[in-house]
Image (cartoon, rainbow, N blue to C red; front, side):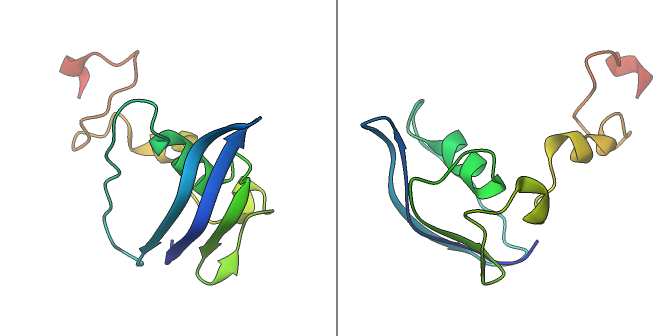
Amino acid sequence: MGMIDIRAVQKFYGKTLAVRGIDCTIEAGEFVVILGPSGCGKSTLLRMIAGLEDISAGVVAIDGTVVNNMEPGERGCVSSSISGATRNSPSSPIRSPRTPPSAT
């Protein structure tokens, strides 16, 4: 995935503001950690970037293309079900619930 540009992104649930005016640029290949207390909008922001939540206001662009109205599969994001292919790999700490630790 390339550069992600987030400008003035907000999320409302009814009249309740859940994500307030986020501005951020994530360069291609950059590793980013989103920190904050429970309920501050971390997961909601990630879901908006991936296209799993509607964006109430602002713009999310991937490689310069605004993706606000694109379906998740059109954005170039890898879903957790696809990235699950690395599960049960000997080098992965992530294990399927059916795989006992001794099996890897």
